[in-house]
Image 1 (cartoon, rainbow, N blue to C red):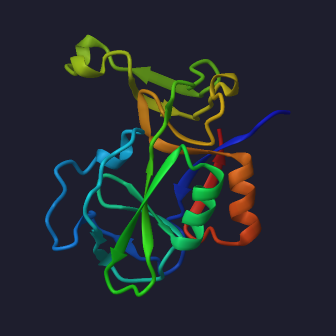
Image 2 (cartoon, rainbow, N blue to C red):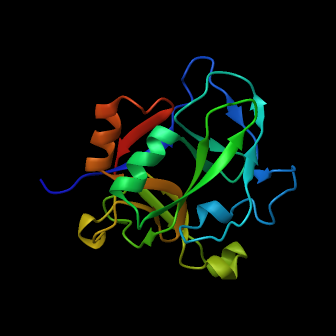
Image 3 (cartoon, rainbow, N blue to C red):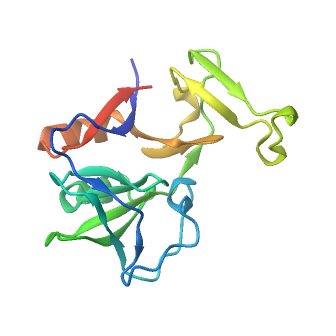
Length: 191
């Protein structure tokens, strides 16, 4: 059967879950680009970061923060990503408002061009008619995402070229997260 891959997404159905705001500098200053942690490439962060809580509730091991959907993970989850995919992710300590425990902003620093256009239920690409010349040839919409596993190579955690919102993890990472029971807030959908 070969390697399996899964979209790592937030589980919005966790009862009483918290909702996180946009990451800022420790003094509350806004970041220049709210999307910087979703591009699938390494970033430079030279300051301690803070994440406000927009709606108090149950802390989650995995969540996304703000409009940029920045991944925020517990220290336990960070240790698994650090051990199993050190070249694929960057982990930056963050202070989550009101939490004594350290959380980490997880930047997925790798992009793979592997969307399977034929096996996905529906894909739409940007064209010149869309008025977004910088995105021509990239994905405008992907429904029923499937990837071509032969194109993944040695990546274990990555974003998709031309369609960066999803975070993809390999089956071994998914199994380790589930085995340890530390995936509160996460949902896995096979791609």
